[in-house]
Image 1: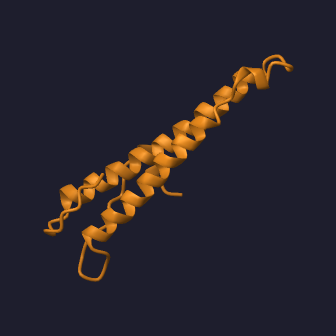
Image 2: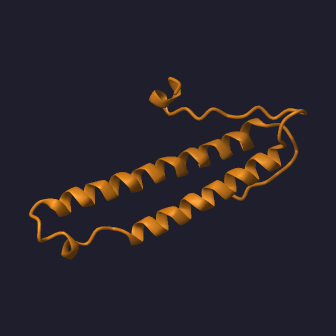
Length: 101
């Protein structure tokens, strides 16, 4: 991994003639964003319920913390995708407009 992990700066792709178009990059980010949103919804349905943990004292808080960590990871990915999409829209001079996110 790179040092980028420490500062959470999103590294933007460089749109140029030999790479993907702005439209393609934004479309792919939108698909990933939608998948993360769906994963967050599905994971929320898996939230721990105390009735499934009470036979062992102290187990529910640990399960709940683990669930919250998972949700936070997905939120981090969602925000990162959104930042990348906005960065591409803001910095790429191509006239293609694709503002789904």
